[in-house]
Length: 276
Image (cartoon, rainbow, N blue to C red):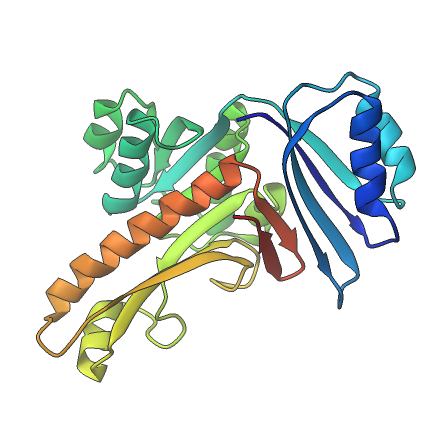
């Protein structure tokens, strides 16, 4: 990727001209640009690809041109650092590790942390460090503190919940605010609890899908990044639907991590701005 400039701030007159004008002053060639204005929230979002790396004065000058509180960031060609959390299900974790091995994702998985040892062979097969932090005998807060400290030692850009079947404490979510991406089946909240695909089968659903979202303190209600579905019919058994659902979950999770790695995601209240 080229150098990427991301901008988010209160909306104002002439923002695009100010940003692109400063790029011109610094002799920076813009190779791609996306912008969006949320008229209700009066917020401006912009992602700009530059062919060159700006000098150290560029961001300071840009902040001076934009409304107070503007958030501007330059991203270089380094891969996005990711730590993955897992439990026992392999499909999302395996999907990400395979994509990384194929260099199909602009990420570097620094480590996998799980509360069970079941997936250790999978991680080690891709030469990714695997840590078990058991929840046995610990409160949710105590376990999250141990997991959080281990995550912090890696200092990742993104934390991916690869079917991590633990409800996170508010302290953990606050510690990594805006960095945690989760994947779940799209039946929530219609089919909650155990065996959601069996519940869906009993109700005769015609589509199944998955949702990737940022994590907040409302269970599975954080800002949605992307969703996808696949069609099913009366001939599909609950087991078949579960397999199809896992494929969708894996695909959506990988795509969400890719969007994050390409700096195409902006949290906008309880929604997201996602540039293609």
